[in-house]
Image (cartoon, rainbow, N blue to C red; front, side):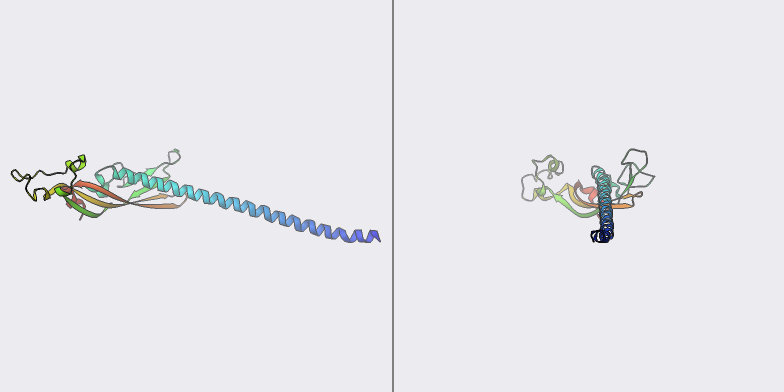
Length: 190
């Protein structure tokens, strides 16, 4: 009798062992896929951050020069591939351009020509904008309301960075407030 009960259990043990093997295999595969998708997410975030850094670098370079309001279609002095407003960036130093960043033509949103009354003469920037009143008018009412040599402008600048190898594209839009000569304001802001 004991022998028959033992024979019956041999098949059940094999079946339970196969089910456990399948479950362990499924667990291992799902862990592998979860790790692989986590690596892809991290890689995508790194590509995005590199694109944002490249765009911000180009925007900073353009803002640190007067070229963006003097010659907005050619705001970046050195060119990449002979194109205006384009920078090529080699991220890993292998001599191959990884990211190409294009600066759109800066757009003047708002311009306000300053009067002498708008200026704070204790600030060097404002003192350089002052227009002295005509001789004999100093101290008279309304003498400081004439136009100054400066205008406050607000610009919108957009940089788009593309990484052709990983097919990523990042667009960064930046607002810029810039004080410019009032004579240039009419040419730059229309």
